[in-house]
Length: 391
Image 1 (tube, helix red, strand yellow):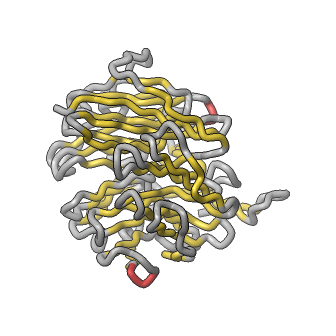
Image 2 (image 1 turned 90 degrees about the horizontal axis):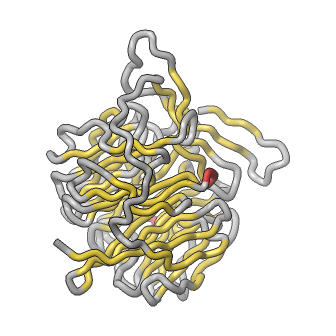
């Protein structure tokens, strides 16, 4: 890790995180610094990156022509909202978490949104989970003192708790609950010199800081991608510089090198057998990828998707039907790739020209309502949606 002072900046430090490859480079291959992303967007950024070999295992490139398999609808544009996560507890009520301390709420399925929190700098919300229409928790960090924090609301966003500090040496990312009691928060990165990333788990609802326990998933690891998987049986998976799995809601972890030879990012399991990891980079090239498993992660495919922008989120409704979404806001590229065969093959379902970071879905009257959200180069939040019949 190297720390650089940034003259003339409101932020004191710009921290660039570099992680060594977990597997040796091939003989004679040169190493390149691959950059996954810069975070946060609306501030001095920290780079999520790694030194990797220039020789990587590419898959078959996907045609960039939009197939229009599904008719996605742009429901809303939210000015100044860099959205990183969404949660819909019902088909009508939803929440969106954004940078600069913003939380947005809809009560009509996503067409109209109202800010229910706007704290401004130094707050950054990267995660949101609504356990019910009224009980909602957001997660993120304070960029002034490097605290990883959450806040709760139990009245649908009208009032919120004060900061619940999970760590003072890391940036917390998303929060997820397997049920009303068992929750997990994963830190995107550690801001402490030489300290590994933390994960935080609760078994009693996580109402206060003492309800959360901090653990080190991988003493030799690095940053993790935003999306991790937490099933109802408390089996969890996450990936980034390394790929880690837990059988007990995040209390204990086993880790291995990343599935992709560069690094991973989003991780999604629809059950204990069918799962996917994605990833991507914005330097030295702009591209993305997806790998799949059908045996719970014992074995993984090569790249089943190799596309021209990073994959930020993976969302499957069933073991067969799902999307890989992402983009790069600074280059006005992004959208949703669709697979109807479990990720064996993909087609570009919708081109949004925005960086799509989060998805959610609800099954209503035999149809799935799917939402995907992100932001464009004008820093406007974009929420897309579609209806698809259940199998």
